[in-house]
Length: 407
Image (cartoon, rainbow, N blue to C red):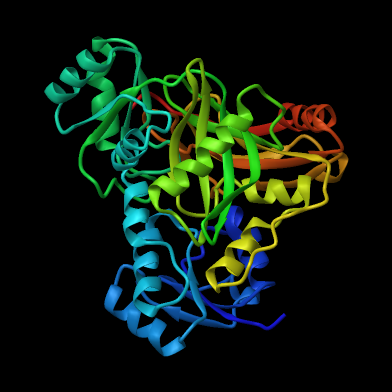
């Protein structure tokens, strides 16, 4: 296979994205654009440019000088400028308008409703009075969320008007730990979708969308929606095939092509409903779970698609893999996260990763989101073995530190 050059915009954090950069580097020669000096990324890149990816003029000048065969990002904050960069360079890319449509959760809702694809009642509210009016029209229970933030940050269920007041403030003021806020003003107010939640990481190539990694999701800290873990592959479930067909149709309706995506959906009492389409490789190590369980390589496929090469999507694995996100039970200043025994004492434990400096304050929703102190990835020959192994690991996690008072 001929080696092609890929301009990768942003590399993400090592705990959650090193596997992806490694897989991509095995398919193409990577030239990385990053806003900080690189460390762990060095073994995987052939070239590096330190510049702010939001500086579109410098980014374009650098890209033109490198003349890559394709451009790619798996960073949620960079999907729009990367799509526009691909369009300007004339390399394989996703229509920037389609990317914007998916980045704005209300615009995607409108698109799917117009196409008759699992419509969900919704409205956009810029103040509390507008949210009250939307709630009266849609009816409780509701979900409020920022229009353009990932990781379930600021997403909250509301069961009555009393809860609406606090929930609107949470969604309107939500920000990631690095200070990132929604780039699109307003709060999305939509009907609550009942039923189990899943995700489908898909590859779309020449107009055909293929679900590659289908995962079950578990969420917690109600009325918020922190992602506690994922299991790959999802167990058979009535309505799942219909949902995956809906996902493919939604990609077409949204105008998506030449990319990998991460779509979240629920199997409700009224049929499958899409929560959102993320126009990038899935987070939470879900594609890695696909590699461990199925032998698929969605990260590598994203590189193939980006340089105009037909992706390899099939795998020959028959196992099950899961990730458990690790959270403290209460707000605390975390000094250490460890297992009760050495990691090699846990069958199927692929990796146990902690990533917070000692003394980090961790607050649970609504005072903090993505409040993880680490994660464990576990695999097994079948579902029962995998989940049993995960349970043993979770019971042995020790989070040491000092409890914090109320904010």
